[in-house]
Image (tube, rainbow, N blue to C red; front, side, top):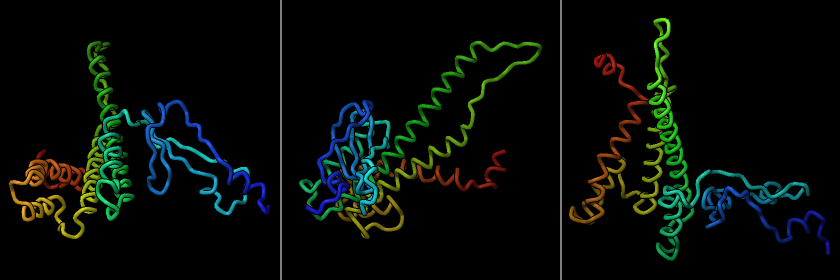
Amino acid sequence: MNERPIDKVRNAGLSVTLPPDTGGITDMSEINGALHMIGSSAIYRVQLADEIDPERTNIAIPNTHQKVMSYGADFLYVRQTLMTARRLFSNKVLGPAFDYKTGINLSFEALQDLVAMHDIRKNVLARFDKIAEDLKNLAVEGRSMTVPSMGDVRGESKAFLQKADHVGVALFNVVKLFYGDEIGPRWFESLHKLTSEKYGNNDEFTKFLKAVLPFLQFVRNARNAVEHPDQAKKRQSH
């Protein structure tokens, strides 16, 4: 009886119409405290008016949606990270004691970096293809020739390696949800040591970690090399 007009609007049922580029909603999930609609070709974050204006002071504030990723469930990386985590981390599989929300947030964090790496790689390859075509048509005019340029490859390579390292950190933080302080400070080396002692060297997980450890160490070393270059070694190489 004492409902204000704004209360009637906010308490009423609602529907959200997302742009066609979602490709149709396949799933939804709470990520970082907000509802996310996962389409086949895009992911949107939905924010209700009460989240923007919890005191209900402005009746004109609408519910909003914002695209946070131009890839959806049809994209391999989305399926291998977020969609897999949605099912693997559920209470039905791991039980209520597992920190599902943090696991999903970390998986989405890793996915965002993987998508950024994918876009960097796609952009660089497209420029390589363009240069290859331009090279076919090179001509000397007046004893001068224009040589094609790739642009800021150094900066893009650095960003790519930084994103790769961020994915590794997110993955390690997911692992810590399972093992906590049992893992020492030496990153995945500590995890390999733990599984070797806990399950034995012939355990499949231990063997898997042994196989991927060199690559994970390479990613970390490559990130360190671009962020903290050894100037003495750089001079020696020249």
